Length: 411
Image (cartoon, one colour):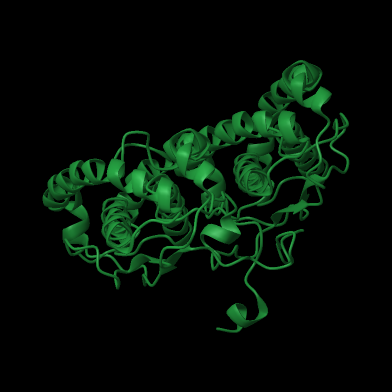
């Protein structure tokens, strides 16, 4: 799989019982953006009351599903409406959507979910649903927050940046919108699974949660050819095995810090990074991506120390001419990308923790976690390349691995 076409093992994304639908046009009203938290207060109150009602209903619904093997339609519709309403509120708060949402959870909002009717579920899965949902809840806490739909997570960082961008431009940056929508969509999958709306376990794979999210052309691209198999022994001792690479990347980083100021001056004068320095910095970005992938279980084999090929690899186009003004203020311009990168780092840590346990049990890295982790590695590499002047293309924050399909590109 690479950026020309990510696929699942089956060759195409499978239909999920809860599906994210994004109809947002990216336009934002500056007035409602400025007062967004104040405007969301009635929804916060109503969502809290609805949540209390859900927990009153959840236990009898669980008992019925445990004995019948299926959630009754009356319970399903009530809980599905709650999940859908939570999506609407979260999308509004995190600026993934613009219109003021309704209070009923009816379909039709700009960022919405389609939810299938109730189907049979395994009784053992129903019996231990709360325990089984814990890994998904951990990842949800990194994406959307641990205390509910409107608590801080990576989506809150996205909303903070988008707030400023929307006030200036009247638009939501597409990459930030797609990242926020993905976080909301995954939280909806988790809530639907926890509340027995569906028996399908949440997948972290961006291609399944937000299938229409795609990357624009970029000079820093990720290619993933990892077979998912993991040696339990190397997984168990992953931190210890990574120590030599941590030492080497630290030493390499010190050299980069020393060389970067004169490289910045040279680029400012001639309008491009000198060729030898460009190749040096590009090798550093590639090697850092390899180490990150290995350390966080996104990649399986032990990487080399030179930045050569790896199953989770970065391809970087040669450094070309750049405008001098963005070069001059590169450190300042990179701050929003670093904020998003910090959010991705928290997601990557959750991916590593969950993947560690899964790989020890099954000998495989779950594909959804691997793909989400790969998206985080790709974004980190783009941030590093932008900072060290290898590229003037801004990092793209959407959690995707591939570009648009031929049909989407045509539109």
